[in-house]
Structures are given as structure tokens and as C-alpha cells.
Image (cartoon, rainbow, N blue to C red):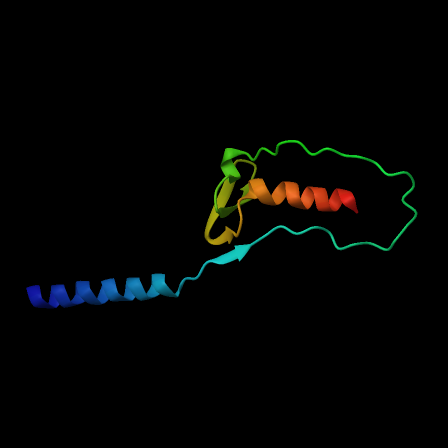
Length: 98
């Protein structure tokens, strides 16, 4: 009986490990809007982008999605390729420059 329990425990462990190994993370980045048709832009404007702050709730590699007023979900397998602190200013500047 002990041998059967041991074999069952080993089999369940192996199944669990195979299941975890087959779960692959997907990585995402932010990107700027696609360039629009050229229009008369008028006088050039200078814009300064200051420091970007990211709320602690989303300051993590996993993607956080609001699922309700007081509920969020954290997807362990959907991750940011770069920290949001570096992606947000880059995309913001690119969008403003258009």
C-alpha cells in the first residue's frame, strides 16, 4: 500500500511539473501610434516630459488588468518585456512628436 501511495505521489508530481513546463510566458511592449498623413503642423512646439511615476499596483513585470471597481487580476504568464517606467515616456514622447 505504501508503495502504491509513493508511485501515485511521484506520478502526480511529474504531471504537475509537465503542466508547469508547458506554460509559457508571453511578453508585451507599448508602441506609439502609427504615423498619420502629413498635415500642415504650423509653428513648432517644444514639450518637456518630466519624470514618469508608475503606481505600485502596476509596477511589476506581470500585466495587471482591472476586473471591476475594486478588483484586479494579475496574469503570471503575460509580462512586460521592459519596465513600464521606461516604456511609458518613450511612447508618450513618440506620440506627442506626431
